[in-house]
Amino acid sequence: MVTSEDRHGALVDVIHFADPWCWWSWGLEPVLSRLKEVYGDQVNVVYKMGGITDDVSEWRREYDVVDDQALKAWVAESTSLTGMPADNEYYLKSGVKTTWPACIAFKAAQLQGEVVAERFLRRLMEVIALDAKDVSSEESLVEVGKEVGLDPARLGRDIRSGKAKSLFEHDKVEMNVNFLTLLYANRRTGKALAVSNVFEAGQHETTVEKVAGVKLEKRVPVDILEYFERHEGATIFPRELTEVFGISPFEVEGRMKILAAGGLVERRDLAFGATGWKYNSGPTKSRMSLEQAMASHVAGFSQQESHDKMNEIITNAVKGLYTQVATNPQKKYHFPLGREALRFVGYSEEIEKIPEAALESFAGVGYPHAARAIRPGDTVLDIGSGSGTDVLFSALRTGPKGKVFGLDITDAMIEKARANIQKMGANNVKILKGDATRIPLDDASVDVVTSNGVLNLVPEKGKAFHEIYRVLKPGGKIQICDIVVQSNVQKVCGL
Image (cartoon, rainbow, N blue to C red; front, side):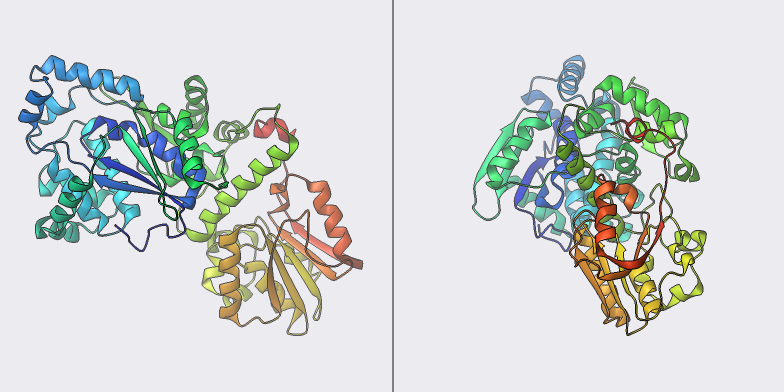
């Protein structure tokens, strides 16, 4: 199914024939989460519904698990392989008679968008496997949909209309693999491979690369709390964190203990002995201690890896975070954003002249314009221009005879800033793609360099300041706001 949220630029489709009642589908969640984190929009995870059975009693006879102890043992053995916890008695406690209503409800959810449908599927699997509840009735399915942001009235209508059932029937006909399999297909070449019975991400990543046939950009997940923010409402288990971040269960436990003690996540101890955590969206996240920041940050590489590799990983992490800030400014982050941040750091009422779409993704840490370095007619460079707030604010200072350049590495921010420049009609403002260590401007071409909360994110700060000095005219000025760590930065970041 193609929706407005489909990743049109994706090269590889990852197809999973699932069922909310299937422990194998639940067990593949860590692998799919890892692939989404690492490859982003280069891959498109496609959930189709295979449908285990319309008659659980008949299914139990077919698989010789009529005896309750045999069924419990099957669930226990399977979840021990996947590492994703489930109540061994969830089929028995729930009294479920058929798995198909949940499958049909997922197809109905997809009609409202893939992203919200994925949240719905995740929540369904949690309610089933962890809480052992039967969600076969329309009422219970609609209630779960409401939890994750679906339009409940529409969900009910689509379940009843027959359209969702028809889509489910189509998925069942198309299914030619088992529930333990992920299919990988290249959208351009048609090349396809399957991986079965593998619940660790390594082989799946290798398969993505083989099917793609070209080098894909890989993002290294480095921030646990950021991951929780993007999965707010979900219960995250150790297996998922070990797979996504490549760390040991022992390390997961240590890091999560610190984050839970600080109120940043809530520990969830389940009745059948498993432990998970949920994101806490309370105010404490904006005031993390040094210990908590270190617990959240995963280096993502060993000390033996090269300096260049370290820089690449940090840069990719920065791009990943600020792509989120550009495309989803309404989400809660562990730093102030938008008008809240602008008011806090002291911007004047002149910001009202700037488009709201620029202001909403502002993530600066101060008010560099307090230095009043910019004069009418000046040429200005803003390093890390983001959604365009500071370049447009600078343009108000230079006037139409001046010139303002913005420099950024994040495509989503560049696109957003250019749209905001067009909205404001600021013909003297131009956004350049590049980083602070290789500024694409001539020597001695800039009167003022400004930057707001960006240079701390540049790994090679010496090179950045050398470039700033190169492009500044004799007597040129710098106005910068940034954050400072008064400790060994390698130790603070766990590098």
